[in-house]
Length: 167
Image (tube, rainbow, N blue to C red; front, side):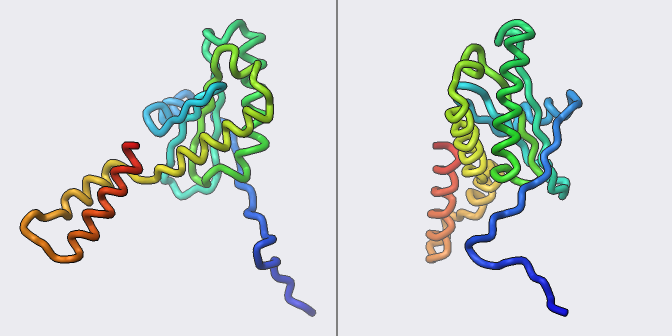
């Protein structure tokens, strides 16, 4: 009887996360004032739920500015497909995402370009993991009276954090 273990090493691909569709308005509104990144074809909104559940929720919406019902449904179908292909491996567990279609661009953009834009948007949103609270905590740690070496290190790290957030 042999013990079967999962393969270890660089060839191991991270397991995909479960992706669920948002259905309730409150879920969409929770993402509204959080992180967002706009591309030519859509806007991606994201928020960390901080509830400890590894699932990813995703919602799709298009306003009437996109067009009539046929145009809105076509745009949402394209957004659903790029999310289906990209989010299981590129999304962060415990996050909610909302994709908002844009007039003419969502339906006319090449599919490969849409997929690349979603990956870029995810990288941009998750690349800026620094919050304003973290910068304020760094500012509080600074002391104008102290001149030791640790203050210089804290000041340098605070400057780099603020540069990441506000650039």
